[in-house]
Amino acid sequence: MRAKSSLIALPRRAREGFTLAELLVSVFVLLLLILMFTQLMTSATAITRSDHKHIDTDTQAREVLDRMAVDFAQMLKRTDVDYYVKQRSGYKGHGNGHGWGQGHNGDKGSDQIAFFSHIPGYYPASYGSSLALVAYRVNESTSTNAAYGRLERLAKGLLWNGVDNGTGQNANYPIVFSPGQLTACNNGPCDPWASAWSAAINNDNNNASSDDNYEVIGPGVFRFEYYYILKNGRVTDWPWDRSDMPDQITITNPTNIGVSQVESIAVAIAVINREGRVLIDTTHSANAAYGDILDVAADLADFKNANGNGVGGQKIGDLEGRWNTVVQSIAQTGQTPSGKLIPPEAAKGIRIYNRYFDLKTIR
Image 1 (cartoon, rainbow, N blue to C red):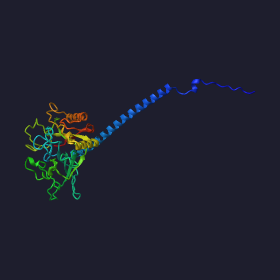
Image 2 (cartoon, rainbow, N blue to C red):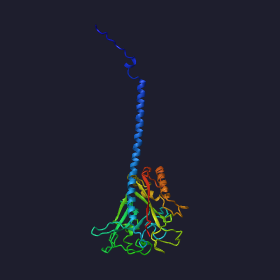
Image 3 (cartoon, rainbow, N blue to C red):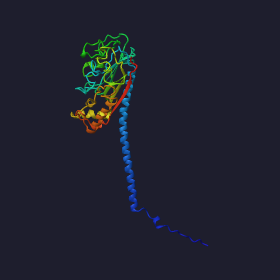
């Protein structure tokens, strides 16, 4: 017998497509997911871009501070060896007179430091040197100088015997331990070596500031400041304790103390990323109302003396905190405290760093 075929009728709903309402809901959900994904990617891109800016400044700061750590660790720690450090009288820590709480005082002003260190310097290859005159400064000569507004390092190789009859800044001088080697000539009689090493203590557009041994070590570092943590814990811009030694005038007069009372040198630097620096330079060139990079530096305050353990004066970290406040203000207002216009986006590329270099082995 022939089997009777049977058809099972499908529900009417199963043979139809999606309704218009269902399609609209699906499209709405899809658009919502796309919007959320786009916002997530935009946020991730902004975070990545910001991180890249920080990586640029972080890398520069690390390289500069690591180099300083080596130089300070090998410093000739003797009281009969000269230093050029900031203090209230005698040397002022900066060739233009800036450096100990005066504000920019008519100049742009970062600190300057010079000392002797057991590190290789730059010297003719036929000679050998395990000792160098080391100096750090932010070049403040003229905007036409490629190093302008950038941290420079000097490492002049010194010899243990006289092998060069030259007398210029780039001659090869023997090391001679005597006070006054780094004395500024305009403050009194000069040591025989002071004129040759004048670039370690001068920072302008004069010949005394020129030395082929300077190199740019921090192209983004435009502000350099340091202060002292003494062995008794006091924080100060004098490299000795004024409470115990009120009659002390300089590190060599009336007694030859060098920096023997200094436990650590605290260094603070301000670093801007490449994009921010280019933006400031370009805007300044196109419009005189806009300041240059050293106009920003001039409004980052000096360290002012703190009496006691920060009581009645500054504590460790106060300086860096004030710098950050100024940078954030520029990023919001597009103007420095002294009235110079700065692109806000450029200020967003500035970061502040510090490190403490231990000198406790000085006797």
